[in-house]
Image 1: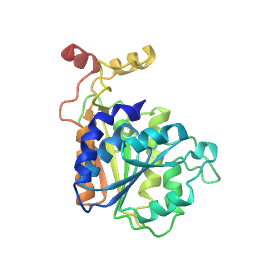
Image 2 (image 1 turned 90 degrees about the horizontal axis):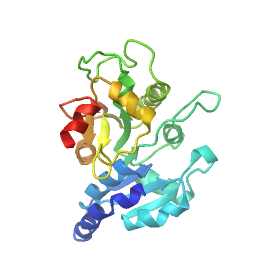
Image 3 (image 1 turned 90 degrees about the vertical axis):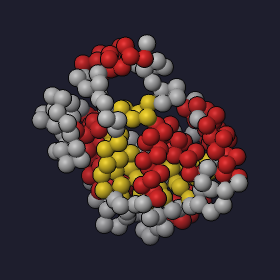
Image 4 (image 1 turned 120 degrees about the vertical axis):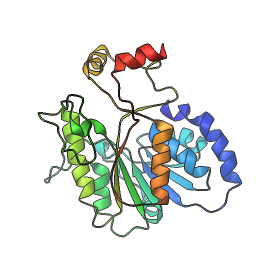
Length: 257
């Protein structure tokens, strides 16, 4: 369903891509909301895009978005096929939006994509990006501003998902000596068909979000623009990607209604 939401925007970029020349190749792990926005922007400049899916039923939809699909579901033992490995090795840029999982293996690794890249060896990629979240900072800063230099985890215990993100980031950053690693800590991603008007959050999640004093957000097209710009001028490192007006969820709801 999420794939279909981007088709209208992708249709315009397909026409532009057909008249463009040059461009590189992007390989996306997790071809969802953010990856499709980036794919649309790059295809308009003549890039080829490969993307992973956990189910064959999504392959047709990805092709309609101009993405060459590949199966990948490490949680079920589905690794990349030979064609996907070749495409990955020759890609100019690699993006992962895959969330961390429970620790696996003797070393307790939580990010399957970082683990795969660690064992891949030589690639053509001059840019490797991982989309993380600002949840790694924790929720107890009392409204203080945080930056890329702010210690992770906040001043107290963090939620389990945030703890997994912190571990995943460390796994990605451990690859920085061998690969051009870029980590993007995104705020709450919103955009077409994903915003407070369209939200169908559970009551539990709604209560948790309303209890947060401030929430930083980022429009999906702004995030895609940041990723695209970084691909053009790779510099490595960690980047917070948020708007400049954090606000509680109930304030946003009142504003849009």
